[in-house]
Image (cartoon, rainbow, N blue to C red; front, side, top):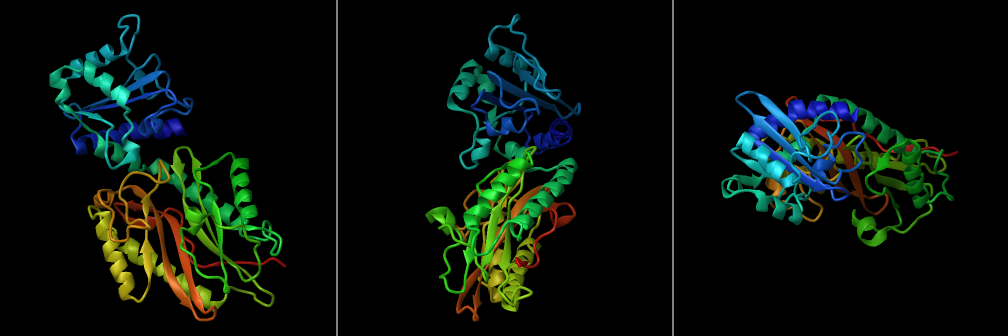
Length: 411
């Protein structure tokens, strides 16, 4: 499946992005165990790492409508990238690269260097220095940052990937649903850390991976509301789960280069309760409303900072207290692309927040709203995160969203 996805991406995604960014040759260079993050997304299913020094050369001839996928390496890189180096004929790998460049005479040569987008800044200094040493001045002058090309490669999703994504979000939801049930939770006995490690083990048992350690936190009527990032910055203290707890999880999985990222809520029913209290239902509905406001402001070409400012203003006009911190999601969990707020940058995010929305991209629609609960005489925070897809047809959640707090019946 990975190789089929790569073939589709190389044939249908890469040429368009190279044309859009006006780069006709792209060099992706890395050494074994020190892989450029972009190269990691290009390796076939049988390659867990690069081999020795691997140099990938992508050459786009727009006029002929062709794209060459070459490797200055001793081996073909799977079935999608062909080896173009015979060491017996040309012992020097860098010299062979120069021969390929001279044969094609590209107008612009993109390399993976970027000040502001870490994932696409994968060319290490040693490889950069050696590349520049071998290039004659006329080709040095054609070297440009492949930042936008690399971001486009990382953020763009295909139809094949989106079918897989639907399944991954469904699996993620199923794991959360089981974690927030009497199969896992026995109030008065089970702790938040018990649930966390149950989730980690469940993912392992399914042959999947977690791209970040899950968290489970609790809001109660007799405890002060903490920052929504408290568990990350201070370390949430392990708690025994009890009836009346409003539970929240942050959880995501990885499979065949795609990642999910979900935050969901559940409520542990107290004796005599048969459903989630109405005041919590009303609070949760406000969280859904912030989602609707936010995704309703998506527009191709609109920057993350513009969408952020519009959405926060509209939410506050409707009497809510929202915070939005949405990130690109896909090939990496915290991926490259349009950033729409950070928890500590609600006034906008320099550079990555100025990057415009592109179609066929996925985001972790991550946000919260603070709601006063008179019955508890305190504020609570509804914290939501769902994978969302922006396409030529508009916005949709990859596989639905949580629209009500789950009730945990345990007796």
